[in-house]
Length: 222
Image (cartoon, rainbow, N blue to C red; front, side, top):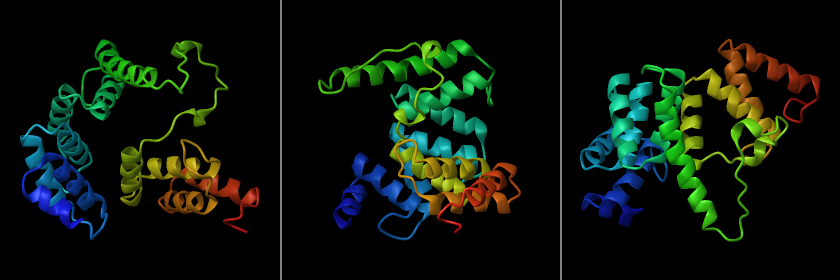
């Protein structure tokens, strides 16, 4: 970690990105959101698409900075142009639903297609991994929802939001742990933790899942 810090102080972009993430989430030391924001701002100015994506996320939720959706959209756009897949997905989602932008299905498709093509190419390079191209409309309704894995960085963002009181995310994480989906191990204790936080905040879904756990005699509530 000392070498990482020294490399970041020397202006090396990748170590700076890693150090900023460590500060944001409190890895290998105390959490320091203010310092993380400062480092992400430097990275964004230098053209780091990871730094731009992180700033877009922080601005969109008002974490460590003043809430500003216009600036968040700007950073997501620059990061997307720089090739950041997360920003492309975010922009695709926003354009599809019209979140802080005019609803535009063509713009959503443009961003989603870029990500889909990149993933397809990466998978095709993996000889031991069979690739089956399926049209979304032809996907069976009963297809396992555990076929996809939750990206590590996205998971960390979700945990961060859950701790800040986002009840929708709390219920979502609770479900993932309750049923063992998206690559997460089944963990009733963690599921109970997230459902309880949501329920205590008055969320009806959180209360419903707590009731389900009590009704079914979950080990976490036994």
